[in-house]
Image (cartoon, rainbow, N blue to C red; front, side, top):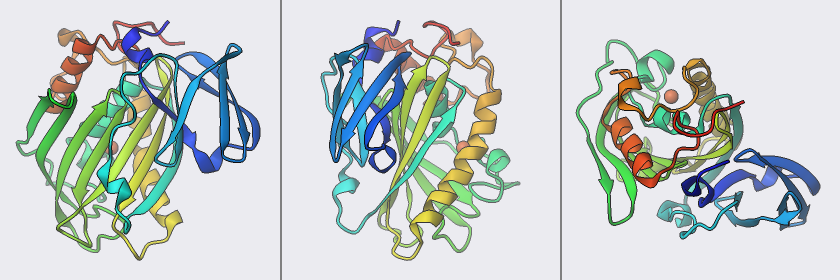
Length: 281
Ligand SMILES: [Fe+2]
């Protein structure tokens, strides 16, 4: 059974354009969901009981609890010249929290995303700032910098990429990164993670980009190549659940953003998908 903190969240289920008309199945926090779609109207049930749901950022969202907030605000999503790119869901045999932590980790770029998001010998993670922002209850990492051979599909040369990370909900994380075609603005890449079981999830990537030139399928393809590289690493991590006992952290993973994220989860009592919560299948 999921803890209260995990139940009282909105979770992304799928991009609207892949949910079939009529009935389909999904899974959330170990519960089977029955989804009925008629045009743009949705009904969601678990064990015959109606499940609260909403549409947001081109996706269907649902909750099995009573969240005291809605979806996080993403101001860039409302800017008229942004491309909205829903990349689709990727199933990963790992805790959803592991996926967020990997998303926050810059140290793996040169080794996992070689010649795309990083390259040797530029392997050093420069100092960055990280904090739990109490006024908004979010984790932020700012002043992140990395030399990237191909920071985005629209990048023609290696650029010194600046990053900001924002963990808005335990399983909703965003990355703001230097936009190759407009240095005064940020490209926004969101990861909406759907916990299906403690050690199984789907990651839905959604991008809000400044890019007039690229084809939609190429933008999706670029992101999918990167995420499939991550999936190999994620599925080989042990334990599959996120360790919340400090002694179980290995020093290389225990960088500032990871430490802040784990502390924030602990404060919330969010243990679903951690070594303190229910075990996986
Ligand atoms: Fe990665």
